[in-house]
Length: 271
Length: 291
Image (cartoon, rainbow over all chains, first blue to last red; front, side, top):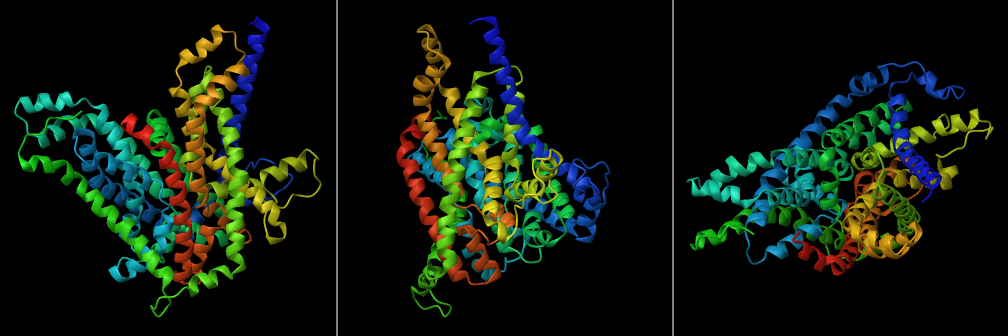
């Protein structure tokens, strides 16, 4: 290829990359701006970009509309979801990664297909079941439902983490007299920790973002997205933008921290 | 793979005991609710067996609208996403300085919920939103374009399509990009040796090898599309009914779990059909890869 042709290709590539990035980033940047802009500036049609900023929108949202409570509920639900899905899922993924046994492929297929099962199908019957179980309108109830959504992902992601840690380390530890459980807790678990942390964040985001089941299962103890869907939608626009900002923050933080694991994790969870 | 299990009977049970909690949990929280949903859909308020729920479902105008719009939205959104995702994955596969940064940026919407994404685009598109402000400033329009409200239903649909393309193209992209990376560079190099142009390489080498990933991306994306809810609910309410939105409406607003269960079952049946297609197409590959 001629040099000018290479230069042109390069310019075209960068132009495309910039356009793609702008398509994703502009709306996010603008919701941040709107969340902190004074309402007069947002509504001023002559003013394209607001210039005056305030914490008032966030303050009203959190303390007058009392969304700090739903935010805390969301965090509690997400943490409980991690606790439940990891307690159940880690033994399962470890079993898949370290043992060969009849029925292993069948179990894997079950997990793979459940991963795509629509959670909304469970929302309606769970709401009725929860009334009988005394779980309706509880943090735990929502977390248990979210855990059933997250569990297949947790199993598949942590499975791939355990597979990537050579079994020889455990075997060596067992040669030196550790039991299998000790070898797991002292050798494999510490090595798996960074990946598990990323998987936990992934689970957090799944639960933090889920709205359909959360809003069907709760009335007073709503999670943040569930409450946005019901109450904040009737509030003035600036509070909606503040709510979107609060919802987006953990997600963006997660992309930043776990970026090394991102493609792998979503690859596993989607393919 | 795996440690040779000691030959006692208990040891043979260990892998099953480790799986048991997950299995029990899924049985109770997925299996049982499905059975219960079937029961709800086929019984009346008094508990007797009936088909009346389905009769009132099919005589409800909103049901047919919801069915229509769910598929219509999927039919418009998914091809757009497929095209965009393919473009971006080819761009990043080609590689350039900073491609990784571009990759992370493109993945951000994956972590943003449908609720937040809807509000993000609501912010862009309201009467005093940034799109209207910019267009007014440039003098391209003299009145703001209305995107919201029943009177502007077709524009609400546009807003939904834009939001969904923005939010969920990354799902298709992740699958395509992973598929692309599995194509060995040697195929491309071989094509280079024979003097293939960029277009020829894409058309005759990359696209055919990408076909399985492409199929799987489309099926998964269609599965998600059947559950589209919060984006529609926030941007259009029931102006544009969709299946999940109707399920929510009947459960939360009307408090009739029987009709809501009918919607849930319908989505389940569609999903299972799609999931079955998916497994049929990809089961051998999964087992080969040992995933």
